[in-house]
Length: 173
Image 1 (cartoon, rainbow, N blue to C red):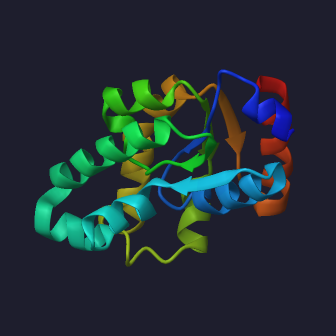
Image 2: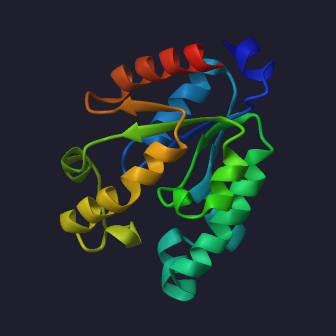
Image 3: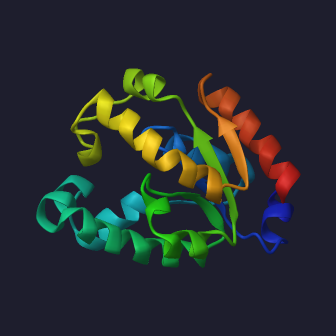
């Protein structure tokens, strides 16, 4: 599998989807299974900005955060890694043009499962609670589907999702 990943023009495996859908968890597990690097765009943004995502939103607004996200997407595009993209990366076409050189996988997790599984308090875009997550799903789903090379339905836990993700990788790399 490692040979496939590094001997292909599709350098990255890019995970996209709603906040809390499992991009970071599955990304870490996939990188471990493939023996390659893991890159979390939100973590990178926090390190570069010297503040949390919530603080960035509070001080610079969503637009300021999106500018940092665009820089992170450009950086991630040059890696050979499993990339957990931010939930809103699809909002700017420039981000997806940069990342589409990799295998883009939409992690499709039902909003009701996300709400049952995560703490939404550190997530600025989910401060509106469950309704906001449903709104994000309605707004972004067409973009996730548009940019994805493959879709992984994540509704049975990380182990089952990891198995499915590795099957998708094998079929597409």
